[in-house]
Image 1 (cartoon, rainbow, N blue to C red):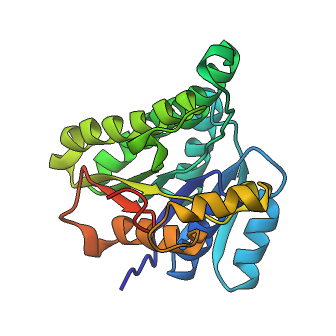
Image 2: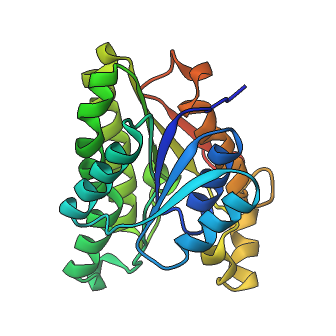
Length: 246
């Protein structure tokens, strides 16, 4: 189950947290992972994959720059001849109440979280259509489904991914390309660990399962939607949130 042998998978934001968990799990299932990220940590993620016996290449990319994305995908096609899986995971948060939110913080979050998915999809779509096969999975958030005070920019970007994916799914279904979304709840990553214990306790009180999720639990959902086993699923949102939003 979830055999990605011979498949080429691009994962953005693969240097840490959820993205790294996704990259590691895809590689453990046989995929050759192109781990794309802006920071230096992507090399560490790739080394961990290789140490575990997997295949991965590090790629430094700025997902807010369409030309950088096009160069990345061109390189992947030159090396491997195909792209089978795209995981749009790269994302940032710049939280602030609406009255105080700066336009540059709105633009930065929308560019990184939403417009980057548009650019990545445009770059991989032609080869996927030519192959008549492909899997596109975007990482949204429970915040994109229920909203959250102080995160209007983040919520808009994550809700936008859902609408974008549903429209795209209708466009490319006839070419055997599926497009789906995973919407995580609160996940135990470096970002959440930096929050005070009191805040974490408040968060956990909102979750019926009374704990944060793990990157591995999100990665399993992504691997399912990217697998052959999910060949009849498209345009869907798989919520992985411990029951926080039902």
